[in-house]
Image (tube, rainbow, N blue to C red; front, top):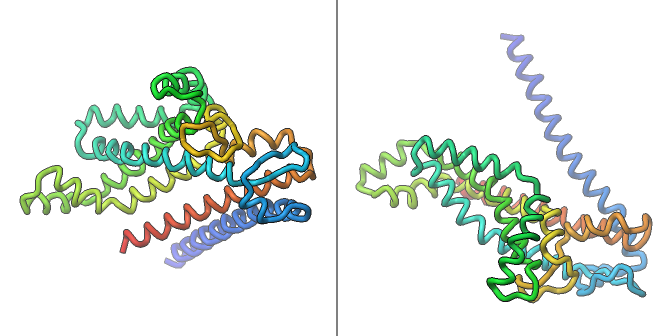
Length: 290
């Protein structure tokens, strides 16, 4: 008995240490980004960076306004979420509750295959097919715009949303559904009013992870959104995201220059946005559990 308690204490200790190490890593990443970000504001004001509408790093004088990049990221994230959330939840509901067993196994394998497709491959599909298709269909000046990026990002986040939502739906106790059927509810009423609310915490987690996947994606948005660092007035215009800016310009920025520090500041903003999304997801999960 003493040996068992000792083993449990050791395991509990290592679990706590792992948790503290993860928190420490996150804090160190924040300090790493903050260290170089602060150096930008020796010669460049914080107000110009946060509220500036021009991103011109090689002009004279250079301009590092983050508004075009921030709006570009928000545009593609918002429209990708609108597309992927209803499709993802409906697909998870179909796989978990409606599809026959043989079809369910096929669809689950297909979803796992979709999750393994490299983002650069989806970028090529956007350039070769989806972009020209949207251009011809919607009569746009160019198919390399925010809408193309939104469709591809929605497609990339679907496997995450479907898999986690399906697990949450399957975990709903059968007694809940049997009780609903016993009260005279139809199958669809049971799914809509019993199963989905009971699985809401897992579904919310799936949505938040999907949004994290969208906002952190780099290659696809760099290839298909047009990379125009201008304030977008519509999702149908070329735009540039925070991640694409870092990936596209870090290799050209001179170490120690204002441009170099500005890219670290962009990374810090992206880090803060991701942290806020995760924090909100935890609040929503706790609220749903209550």
